[in-house]
Image (cartoon, rainbow, N blue to C red; front, side, top):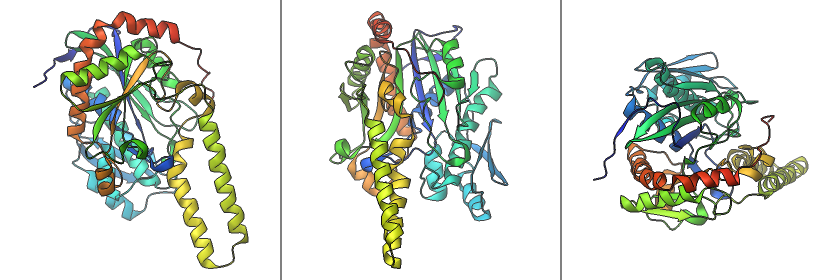
Length: 407
């Protein structure tokens, strides 16, 4: 049985970083990609709660106009707005989440509404997810105001935030941050401040914790990627980084940690290619597909034609569009789809099996999943610290000037 110790730290900065985000409403993407993009957030806040115990069970959900407010048992509150309002029926459905743990926001949202889509398709479920994540972050601030740093996201169109502190894990100091990337109105997703990208208010917290200069473990989504996952019979953890652009010392530490605790893990060192125009090209191709549908619709005469064309458009908007709207194209060419500043990080995520996606259709991270993430992360720390000089060298040598946050 793998055990580890975790406690509060008196240091202002760690010697390495652990970061995870929630992308509210970033569920679908192109080519059949489906995910729970709150997995990294869930792992980080669970880690924080082991040093700073909190009760994040939902005490109440209140709807006023087009705003939903979630309150936890320990007094944390989170609010979010649904662009097209919230009906009494939706208000009643949202109450199903009361009593559940707000850390697992996608699971609770699915239990309440059955499905969740971004891109303005299901604004109330996305607003509820956003409010739950805000409530979790606020719970730590309410209970331990002197021990945590918080800033709003503060990028155009966003309403998220980030929370950070320093923890001691097995005697080693770690700067730890949980980020909520959320879009106003329950639209989702805008994630120009995902991964370890230092933009908006997140930059303020990262600099105070040293995360703008530290080798960092980035915790990412529980995702079904058809090209990789279709033949899997069970969900497995997945280490990803780019040998030429990211931090191989961090990636190798994660792989070694997984081996130490006998957690089945896929490892890839060719992920997140840089210097491409892939996202810009995908955006262009999606625009062309929508344009063709629009032209066909303008010429359609029969009802069955029009319904079929609009059905195709709805599928593109609710699913494929999530793969191009989540990040600015120029930024993506530098940091890849995971939002990794060059030289600084590697990613630990979870690959969802074809068996499970066919049953559940939309993934949801569970407490057991979080335990598996934490087993690997905590086991990897020994390896990362043993090679911290090498990891820091990659940070120094591969840093690049990042674009200003004018998104």
